[in-house]
Length: 266
Image 1 (tube, rainbow, N blue to C red):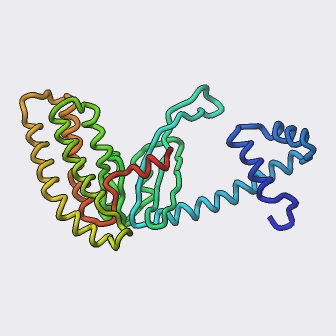
Image 2: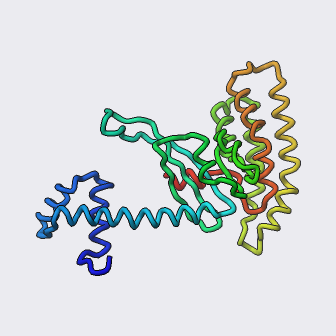
Image 3: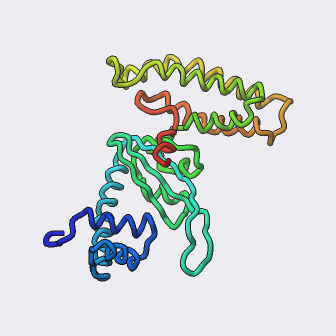
């Protein structure tokens, strides 16, 4: 702030100690004092307040910018969080992650730990975007202007859990074929564009997707599996995602999976 005798590094240091290391302000000031740096308690609290206001404005701009991206990756992941001051222990709470692929920016959204489907509805409203996710059911109820893309890695995981099964191995092999074809080219290298990739995808994906669907229905109608067996659940899950799977191959720039969200989470 103009006129302040403390620069951004001092404020950042106080914020790190207070929020990353959970140190009370009194302990922070004691630590400073031991190193010959004196600061009034009221000053420290005021700096934290100003930092909060600045970061809040920055977060608001960042969120608005990301939500304007036409291609977004979404993920909702749970963490153990402390309960409020009137309760003891911890609880399971969800953190939403949104990545804007056009600007390569992202933000996290926390709403009291909720995973309610109303949250993406409120954030996206009537946006006309492409949204890639791990198949959380709430995304299916968003605006019809939103095109949902599946995550093939997430779908494949269902079959990998039972990969000793020959039919599971068959589906894994076919999904891997899609990846193998996709990895032969990379947009931005050797003159390869999104338009070229779209044309290529339409060619290679059609026969593979047709074979996958044929195998899924073969497994589904087989007498060898119980309705609630792991392979039956995996098959039903993939069939329920068939439209979002096909949507991937109607675009040239999209990923085959939502793994970028998991990487950013880590």
